[in-house]
Image 1 (tube, protein in one colour):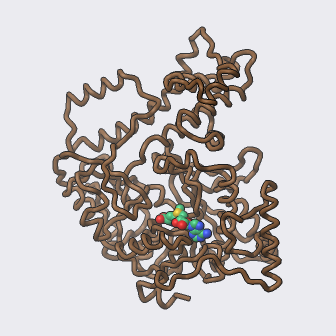
Image 2 (cartoon, rainbow, N blue to C red; image 1 turned 180 degrees about the vertical axis):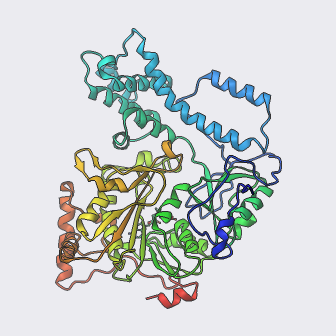
Image 3 (cartoon, protein in one colour; image 1 turned 30 degrees about the vertical axis):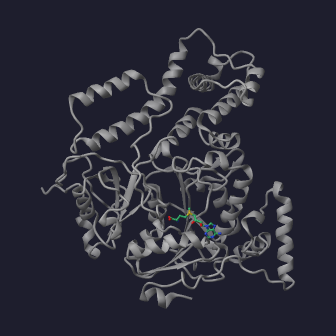
Length: 573
Ligand SMILES: C[S@@+](CC[C@H](N)C(=O)[O-])C[C@H]1O[C@@H](n2cnc3c(N)ncnc32)[C@H](O)[C@@H]1O
């Protein structure tokens, strides 16, 4: 029987020269491949960013040493292995995978080991005194990093079996508070965000999450099937000294780059638009959206276009994709990517998403890859650790709620009318709460399966809020679980609105002040803490309804809202 090669995507060829075809894809990931692989020489590992509209040239190390350091004996083992057999192009993927898996396993094992080791210990871990805590917090008595690590381990151990390990006069919340303070100081988070993220997981898993934010994610690229096939792209890059592999069975277009002797964002293939540097997680909402050739699709917050160009490719350059972004500056990179990748069915436009569907509607599908706090991509942007406050989450959640209603109202209801909502954030405020709100305000909308093969179920309940069984259809992705950015995907089907749905729609318009151009700083929502902002919003609504028209925030930029193809021209409004 003919054995398929590693990059054999021959099944994709039925629907056009470079088209993606159906979902099934049979890679022989572990088997031999048919490619000539040049010896690895002087390989630089390059950073990847989904939003890379500039070309990454700075080499970075493949992995950072986990801060919960592995034991030295393990390091010795590595050295011995390295002496036994030198790293070559043939064994490098396996080594790289093994190292990654080892790092993750070690961090998880650390906690378990610490707990097991402590089980036989006689000495009981003592929480620091109130004075000591105060001195540490004020900075007058800084704690040594090893001591901090040890204390965190001890707290995790106690919280893992409180009855057994806790000191008699101490409460669970005292250990939690100490652990939170130590997490914030050890990993560099503000206290608010450390707690918000900690609350998402069981204690030991929370540490794994924080640890994984210290490690870079794998460099991944997406084959642009409008220009080439994955097998051809892989061969071309291998010939240039790039070491790569298919991203996983779940994608027929993704490749993971392990090492490269050339800057991966400046190869002739990159410049010719044969691929997009794109985080693995960013494939997921587009797979869930499942756009079809000939459809009319809106990508509501699209810059710099990783998902837009994927949508365009899945539609085989037919139909029309409106690629919108409220940030005019960012639409420049979006336009450049659209051109580079040869997407002729894309119209770039520059509205505030909350102006839809007033500016245009009647879409078959809408992707809302919403602006978010970025708590899923901390490994790429560590500034999130310090710069996000409670107010940011209130405002973002409100913006997301406004946007999702506009996304829903922009599709023509039908049995296939789809809205996909995604964020690169892991907080509940920005994900399940937004979806629950949308379902409440738009009763003709229901959650459907994302069609994604992996990912955890969304929260059905969280800290006193009940979202219901249905929320299990949404998907959460985590760096420590999936070795990809933290991400959330929900898929909604938009049916025909009944009377009740119309009523709910009108109510929500009133609640939002009917003012789609409300600036972010002034946005309000039904949160008690924001009562003042809600009043302001209502005042504007009344003004507007007395005939005082507010100017929309973002205007169409005629130069940017240009069409690149015939189909697009005929569909433009
Ligand atoms: C997560 S990024 C989108 C990434 C993009 N989907 C991609 O895959 O390349 C969110 C985008 O939302 C845009 N944005 C922020 N507020 C918006 C609004 N009110 N309407 C439309 N876009 C908005 C931002 O400029 C940003 O480009």
